[in-house]
Length: 106
Image (tube, rainbow, N blue to C red):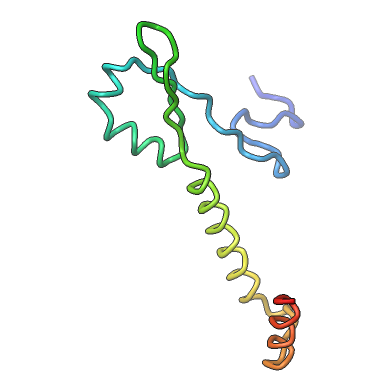
């Protein structure tokens, strides 16, 4: 059975949609203690955890805000490098760049 042409695959997101942070996973305190190195690797990759004690949430383990910002910074640097390789980018003289830097310091 074929699907209609206008239907997108489930794993395909619209280009303008921002990625959604994964929902925190609940994990017991004993399991968190036992598997802390693995949990830290997952947190570094963006996953969040809610640690429970006897079924009640007591703590959150999630990426630091600065870490998430570093990912955005890396993305910005990548885009700037792509821009610098473009043949149609405007060229500036050293003097113009210097003036722009001084203007930005005011």
